[in-house]
Amino acid sequence: MLQIGDLKLEVPFFQAPLSGYSDYAMRYLARENGCPFTFAGVMLAKSAAHPKVLKKPQFIPRQDEHPIGAQILGRDPVVMAKAAKDLEQVGYDVIDINYACPAPKVLRRRRGGYLLNEPELAIEIFDAVREAVSCPLTVKLRCGYTNSSEFRDNFFLIARQLAERGADALVVHPRSVKQVYRDKADWSILGELKQECPDTVIIGSGDVFDAEQSIQKMKEAKIDGLLVARGAVGNPWIFRQLKAGFTGQPIPEKPSPKEQAETMLKHLELVVEIYGQSKAVRYFRKFTAQYSRLHPQKKQIQQELMTAKTHKELIKAIQTSYCLNW
Ligand SMILES: Cc1cc2nc3c(=O)[nH]c(=O)nc-3n(C[C@H](O)[C@H](O)[C@H](O)COP(=O)(O)O)c2cc1C
Image (cartoon, rainbow, N blue to C red; front, side, top):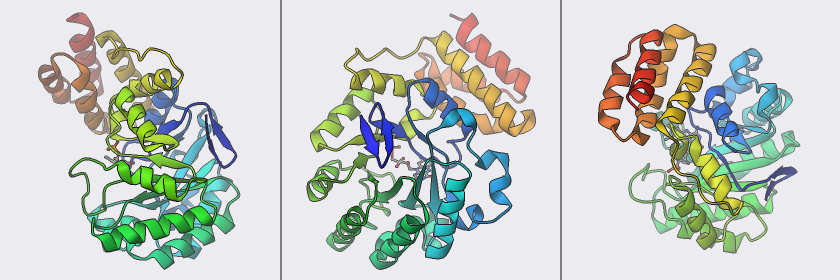
């Protein structure tokens, strides 16, 4: 079990906020496959705090998807606090503060991972948000702005203070901001952090692609849970594998091509419902590219799916490539 504030999860993992990906469709499939908690994509606090934005249906959690978390990005403590409060009011069950994003346009505005350079402001923002919401509050961090010892010290300083000031969990991706996705995530840093903050829930993020290996990494680092990010894109079955692994069941094999096809079709149906047919096919390409990696003839399949231009063509391509050839 994993407890984050008053939120109790039966199994210790959840789906990451994934900008441009973790919409209702992806969250639905995650839950269907045993994921106990999911995050919507990051929101700019300035937008979330705008009175009109949180009236749009795509930003409001649906009834069937609790518990769900919202993540906010920004550097003004007042705006961050208002955004968090508004998001809590429209129904999000957990708020997360982003001190991790490495995107150049975010760093240029000194938001996201940039705030690891500014421990005082990072703590001030946290205090303002903590004061504003009563739901569980978590913080997502990378392990420093760069890998230099000065920045590593800043990370530990911020993490320790967040723990002392009542963060309900620290979700840490142990690569530096400047490292982006290069090299392997260094999970030994997570173990070190857990030793420094033994009473705080520490969730590990980074290269969670294989259920068995990730459970092993979590146990070795002696941390409390796993965040599933890229490993869930086009592979919602990772959640049922993790669930099995954590509940002492044999880890299921990858799904049959028929099940892969059925899941893709369901995903596509949800995407069409959200974005409409004309936008859906283009939007869905990033998912088909990932889904098709599980297929034994992935190159050929990928090409067939990618060339589909209309909704009808894509459905036909999925049916033909996955079912009729098998
Ligand atoms: C396309 C994409 C979008 C992401 N969006 C977010 C985001 O909105 N908020 C966030 O905290 N992290 C975001 N991340 C980072 C992931 O949550 C995660 O920490 C990172 O990918 C490392 O985990 P992984 O190696 O298992 O993918 C994103 C990552 C990717 C690849």
